[in-house]
Length: 221
Image (cartoon, rainbow, N blue to C red; front, top):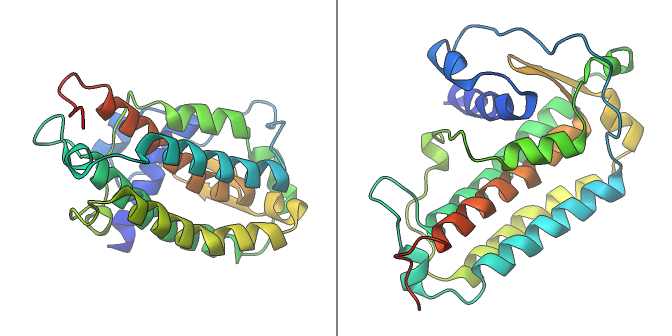
């Protein structure tokens, strides 16, 4: 199951690094080429910008779901698509898993000599992950079970899941985060970006919720 989780993260990272997802899924255990040898990424962000992004993604999600009725939370555009309630459950479940994965990477020895291998900046990551033109299947433990019929409960659980993440970021050293390099089959990112990915994942599914609400059959109340 651990391998499946890592494959899920790596597959989504394909979006972030601009590579072809279909070929990778077909060759799930085959390593892919690393980032192209272009100039190192600039504008890799700061602790403050990271905290602001977490705050913004929380606010955006709340704006989308606050006040929705049980019927609206349960509505599915089709039988094989998630409802808003299921999206919320997936977001909450993923926060903890992604944070644990980020901490594991940050527990490794720093590699400041490899900083130039990071080719994408924060805005690239946000925009690419927010693009839902490519979709991926979540591992079993991140599949929703229909837990939420109340958006307030989901938002409360998300806030609780984010407390340790935000506390970790606030005490982190910016340079140290960027000196921790993670090499995935899809490319290279730093510790700052591993943490950014948590909030960007939330933003991606907030976009999905907006898509559901835009469906002509979405309940009026």
